[in-house]
Length: 311
Length: 228
Image 1 (tube, each protein chain N blue to C red):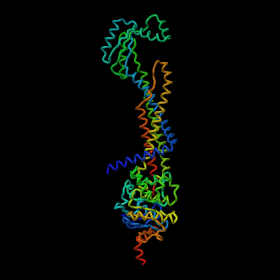
Image 2: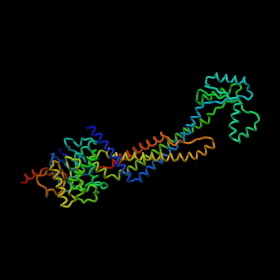
Image 3: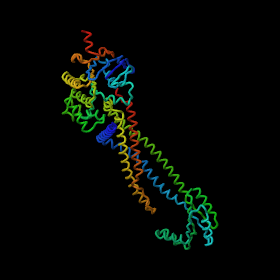
Image 4: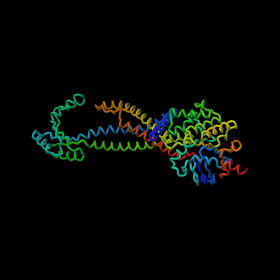
C-alpha cells in the first residue's frame, strides 16, 4: 500500500513536471522574458557582492599584517641599535623583530628604482643615504587598540624617531566594506521582494488561463496538492532558468570588467582581477531564485484557490 | 450505499433548494431524478457527489457522513463517482485521449496501463478512432460520449449524470441512454437527472421526482400501486 502511494506521488511529480515543461515550450518567448527579468534582478546584488567580497579579502590580507615600523633617529649608533633591539625583544606584546639597516634599505630602494627611470633620477641626485635604521615589529595581537598602544609605547623608546602603524586606512576601508555589505543585503532584499511579486503575478495569470482545467480536475477528485504542483514547479523552474541566466550574465560582466581592470591594474603593477567562477555565489543565487520562485507561486496558487470554486 | 436523511440545502440569500429529502439508493440501481427546471435536481446530484454539503440533515455515502468528512478527504470521496455534466466540461486545449486520461493521472496511473484503460473507455463509447482528435471537432453527441468515457475510465461504481441528453437531438440521446443502460447492466449504479425520462424509460427504473425542492415520489413501482 505505502509502496503504491509512493509511486503515485512520484507519478504526480513526473506528470506535473512534464506538463509544465510542455507549457513552457509552447510559450518559449514569455518563459525567456520572465527568466531574463529574474536574471537581471539577481545580477545586481551578485555583482555588488563580487566587488565587495574581492576588496574585503584584499583588505583582510593587509589587516593580518599587524606590523609596526619603528624608525630610529639618524644619529643612532650601533650601541643605540642594540639597546632598542633589546627593549623590543623584552616587550611582551611583540612577537618578532626584524632589523633593517639604513644601508640595506638604501640598497633595496636603489634596486627598485633601477626599474623606474623617473625615481632613479631622484635617487641619483641624492649623494648620501637619507634613510634611518629601522625595525619591523610584528605584534602578537591584531586588535587595532592593542596595536595603537604598542605603537605609542615603541615611539617613546630612547633613540626612536617614529613608529608607524598603517591601520588607519584599513579601518576606514573595513567600515566602508561593512556599509557595502549592508547595502547588498538591502538591495538583495528589495529585489527578492520584487521577484516574489513578479513570479507570483506570472503564475497567477497562468492559473487564470487554466481555470477550466482546475475546476474539472477538482470535480473529478483532484487534491489541492495535485492542482498546486504544476504551478509550484513552474515557479521553481522560472527561478532555476533565471538563476542560470544570471550566472551567464555575471560571467560575461566579469569578463568585460576584467579586461578594463587589466589595463588599470597594469599601471599599478598589480594583477588585480575578479575570479570568473564563484561557486558559492552562483549556487546561492540559483537556490535563492528557486526558493523565491516556489514561494511566489505558492502564494499565487493559495490566493487563486480561494477564488476558484467548483460549486 | 447512498442514504439521505432529512437533507435540506439552502444557498446564501436564497430559499431552500432542497427540503427534507430522505431516500436510499442501493448499489446497482438505475435512478432517475426528475422535475422541472430549478426543482433542485442539480443540487441533489451535487450533494451525492460531495460537491456540496447539506445545510442540515445527513448524507451518507458508503457509510461515510459527508458533513463530517475532512476537507482533505473530499477529493478521495469524489473519485468513487463518475460525473457527467450537461455542458460536458471537456478541456478544449487537449485532445480526446488527454481528456480521458485526466482522472487516471489524478489517481497516479500513467504510461501503458493508463493508455490501455483510456482506449478501453473510448472503445465503450465508440470513439476509439478519435483519440487524437480535438474535442471541438466532435459533434455534440460525440462530445457527450467523450465526457462519459472520461467519467468511466477510472471504473467508478457510481455514475452521476446531470441531464446528459439535455442538449442532444433524439437519435443522439438514444445513443447516450443505451450507453448508460450498458453500464447499468454490468453492475454500475447510475443516477441521472433528466426532465423527460418519464416518457421514454422503462418503468422498472427508480424515480426521484422533485417539485420545488420537495421529493414527491421515491419509487415508480410504489406510485403505480397507489394509482392503480
